[in-house]
Image (cartoon, rainbow, N blue to C red):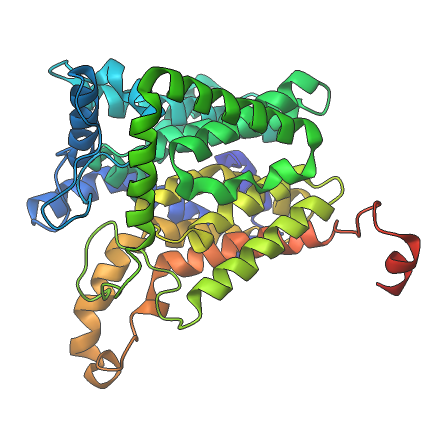
Amino acid sequence: MPSIARLRSLSDDHPAFVAVAALLVAFHLAYPAVDWWLRAADIAPAFDFWDFGAYRGGVERWQAGGTVYVENEDGGYHGTFLYPPVALLLFAPFVGHPFGPEAWVLASALLLWVGMIGVVEALVGSRSWGERLLFGWFLCGFQPLVLASKMGQTAAFMGGLLCFAFIALERGAESRPARFASGALTAVVGVVKLAYAPVAAHLLADRDRFAGAVVAGVGLVTVSLLVFGLERHLTYVEVLAWGVGQGGATRSPALWLAPYFRPLAGLAVALPVRLAGSLVVAAYAACADGADRTTFALGVASFPLLTPLAYTYYFVALLPAAAILIHGELERGGRPVVPTLGLALLSVHSYGLYAITNGLPDLLPAVASLPGVYFPLQPGLWGCVLLAGTAFLRVGESVSLPTWLPPTARRRA
């Protein structure tokens, strides 16, 4: 993340990047006021912390000795606690207090802010406290983070853990414990919320990171079984099975909701595309040589496209990936405007889609009536594509066939 002085110095070589970056910074700094206006107009939701209510319910039922997972009258679990039992230990300290939801949101946001400062400083060196505070305001203007905070979601917590996983990855060049820590932090993200599993791609590039993830994962499962018992875990498996079966008819973007993001919903072959994409990302991670930064960014940037059911607030996890890719493009004299534009599209996804679904029927009624027309118009889709595409190209420059292949196979390839 270049400073203002650095942006001025880049204006000759990267004028498009400087223009987009300046607009993005201005938008983020102004967005808290924009959100206030949207709430006053009954367009944006208020800070009601709905999801924290589900966390509270799960913790209270566990502490009372009851069931953690509550089945609805329709046989599903929608709107109830959906995390693995071990996640109750994360939410428990915030339950039972009058300001529990606010404390949870504040603690998660601070974790993300400190983590993002660490990512930026790992890339470009130490920043002043003035720049750190200004960057905090910049984060407050990232709409997916604002939305996650309003919902009481885990997105900021997950993003913060991923930031620290990257910081440990950076220090792992000279420290084996740091490599273990990077893998362990990544495993915590995946265990707490399985939808984030694709972010673990960088584990395939390093044995120590992979080992750290395995140890942390086994440890968390062991603790969970000891504290919560086998029966609750068997019920959680039923919850997962129910969740897998929720991939029926996709809600149209025209029926807009702020968290809406269905990147591949317009494709009849969405599942094969996700499986193929996951295999390619895994293969790239395993075969890349000396590209730890961009491999990390590739797994993180591609995960909203590869996970079965994504939401707008998942974009919070892409903040460290965007920082890594923008810095990398500047360092190599590449095209920093591409990942910067990707971040901008993520920032405006929710209300950009709102404007499209409300404005297109009036401007182009014939186009608006076409089946599935809104799916490819999702701003966040193209934001993810630009970020993941940049990472894919840069990791691809360092990919080589693994050394364990027989020499004849390597020569044929």
